[in-house]
Amino acid sequence: MAQVNQQIVALGGGGESDAQTRVLLRHVLGLTGAERPRILFVPTAVGDSSEGITRFYELYAGLGELAHMRFFPYPPPEPRELVLSHDAVCVSGGNTANMLAIWRVHGFDRILREAWESGVVLFGASAGMICWFEAGVTDSFGPQLEGMRDGLGFLAGSACPHYDGEELRRPRYRELVDEGFPEGVAADDGVALHYVGRDLHEVISCKPGATAYRVTRTGEERLDARALPAA
Image 1 (cartoon, helix red, strand yellow):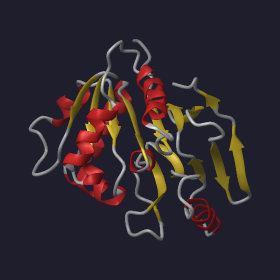
Image 2: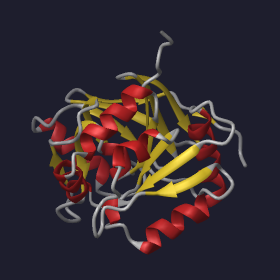
Image 3: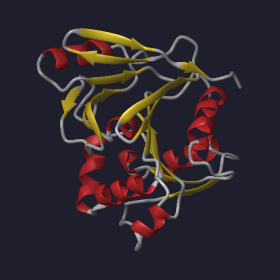
Image 4: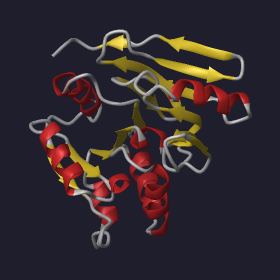
């Protein structure tokens, strides 16, 4: 039986321009191995907003065959079949806690696990980054940022996006970890952490100087990032 690569790509955020971000997205989508990948966008974290969906189609134009999945006013009739028919699932940014609650009510967390175990590439930025981990730093409860411990748990430990993009992220993550929050990883905007199985395989960056960090109670370890060629 052929081995299935279980891949998750956790993005700290977009690049400094759409062109820069698309360089990163092309790399992520290349991990599917498909010449024209089928990409499913899940915008639950922004309440399935029309603006968020339109933005997806604009940013991903020409990168593959695009579709989206709404949970409002209710999910599609065959969500499992819909997800498993795609090469990649992209999760939007937004309110992580609300998103996870909705997913669990409808059993979508189990569908995503099956997709991951079947070789569908799972990825996203911000909420779409931290949801895969056991824990994450989130603004789901307000701009002060809180530690959330009920992520999907596909990946161990905690995660923090926007490490260089939002002023409070770095000190708040350090504070939480020092107080006993699970240790983990942080990613600057424009940076992707590529996991194969549950192991961090590579850090990729589309933004000069941007990278990722291991964050523990003993401090931060800067991780080497492979810079992608400019657009």
